[in-house]
Amino acid sequence: MKQTLKLTDIMAVGFMLFAFFLGAGNIIFPPLAGQMAGENLSSAMGGFLLTAVGLPLIAIIAVAVAGGSWQHLTKDLPVKVSTIMAVLIFIIIGPAFAAPRTGLVAFEMAFKPLVSEGSFTNLTFFSVAFFVIAAFFSWSQGKLIDLIGKVLTPTLFVGLIIVAVGVFIHPQGTIAAAQGAYLEKPLTTGFLEGYNTMDTFASLMFGMLMVDVLRGKGITESRATTKYLIAAAFIAAFGLAFVYISLFYLGATSSMVAIGADNGGVILSLYVQAMFGYFGQVVLSVIVLLACLTTAIGLISACSDYFSSLTRFSYHQWVVVNSVVCAVVANVGLSQLISLSIPVLFALYPVAITLVALTFVRNKLPNPKVAYRIALLVSFLFALIDAFKFVGVDVSSFSFLPLFNIGMGWLLPTAIIFVAMFCLSRPEQAMEMNEATH
Image (cartoon, rainbow, N blue to C red; front, side):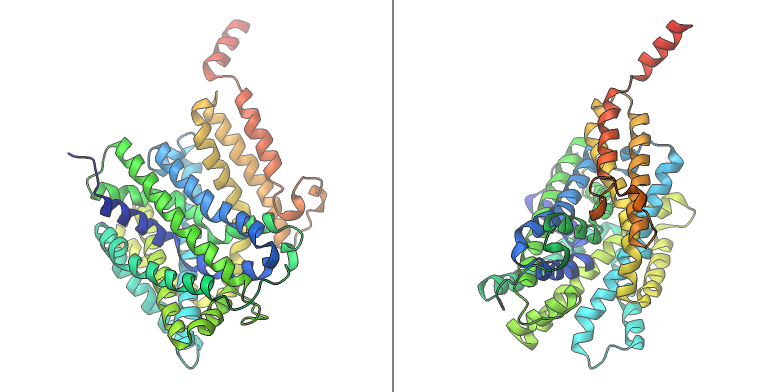
């Protein structure tokens, strides 16, 4: 069988991956970060792009290099540990946080501004309708590339281009002074803000979903799969960078039209209304609704596919279960959901970063099994310190750690262990030494 794709199909796969990534967090966090960064816009945006574009891109490439599946990526870990990690990540990006957040942001930014009031009853009805539609699109997994990559995403991208052109041609204010943590630490603050997109977690799982999509298009050979997966990752990364730069600049020039706004959704909505009036709000509603819907479809599909491989329940049954849970959790409220997710991200993001880094040097490690287990354990234990600090636990005894005060106390200990793993003996050398001593 011919292992090639037409250019239109490659673009469709890339745009599909971009649409999966571009969801709630990608829209609501950059405008507020841009407004607070102000004159330190470049540094803050650079840090954000590292975690929100660079890490997901590298993670997708890591999945491709490893062999295209979570099992390949974690083959040096005990099976139970690998499974627990995967389940935790899927719960985070699925029914617990990221997927319900798509419905909440769609309600707050796409539906609520167009109606007279956004009552709890409206939220309930909207979240049910939203996740029923997401379940419908997730139901036929094999048609995802046509439904999303060739239909929904082009519409979404056109809307984003309209907003971006308006922002750069007719900004609604001048760039103000930096605020808060962005005043002294714009780069690291932007870096940590990128955690909120959850895209590094998502990329580890979307990589597997994209492999299934490519397989449905007749791409089964490892080399061809890796090539097209990397191509899709670069297309998605370019699209995400375009969106983030536009939204950061929008936030930085929003002080006149969105003064005192406490979240990026409000900033974006007020800004677009100032530029385009009511028509602008309609365009924004379409953009947000499509962005959140495509991400919800991708998350529900990825979670259902994985959970069905672990249990007796079928893919379709898991689609129903995940969609119902997402609709229920969405009624918790956006601010509460975000505050609950932050300590979890602080605890697990460093583990995902370490896993991706290990993938690229695995062939150089003398003892991959030991290296993976020790490095991931160290990154997790020190990341827990940052997570505990966020929820108010006194961890001041660890303040001697470099970068502790900015929530990255895990970095140096993990880096030291990472380097030390190259000094281990190979398993066969250790066996030879034991035999010699006996």
